[in-house]
Image (tube, rainbow, N blue to C red; front, top):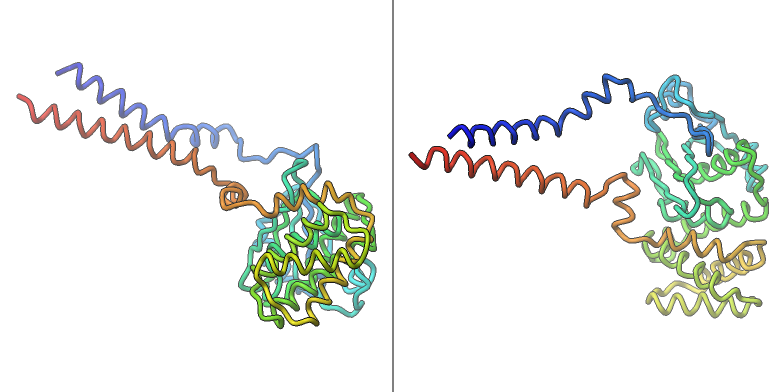
Length: 308
């Protein structure tokens, strides 16, 4: 009898221990974030057309609090002219938070307000950033108002320059053109945003693997991928793709490194769970452990009161 009661006490103690680490951590003040000495502070880029109230709202969306170790900059129409040869009178609302990642982790794009980014998907951003030469970073995009999402790209380019990184202007312009082509295909060519992203990624991977030397070889790659994915588009849009990827072919690009970044972009659903910070196996293990303990408790009381 006393032996069984002792077993219950041990089990209850184990359950209590599961909750104690968070209490200890809080009491020790470990909620303070460590300074990133390797990559520096995240960079927050705010659209220059936002009002002060909208900027505050955007920072909340991006989980930026007063006192956080960040670098904050503003992106304007003049930046669009500088980085992508755009219109200096452009209105800039899309904002972003850029956090550098370890080499090999690829580009991760998370739209905090997907309901307000009407034309550009995560994968479209990621593809364009890879073309621009951006590597291994988490990009969080947000807007407090409905926008197409194009201006976020300029802000990201500016953030990298502010951090001391040199970007090839030719690559930036082609990356912006790629985003325009992607949104045009999704809007007018009769295919979905998901098909557009898959098509661009597959063509780019083929370019990286085959390293075509002529425009004709680029045209064949485009035709082959359209056939492989069973996608039919009007000749006008097919020509847009050929023109775009012929420009990409002529850029000063390390296609081996581009291939690595693209492989990360084409990751499966498990990678998406990891990007969200969820280790499915870890949490399942906890649930299984707790379930086993509860079953042991149930069995104990069943035996205790079932036997006299």
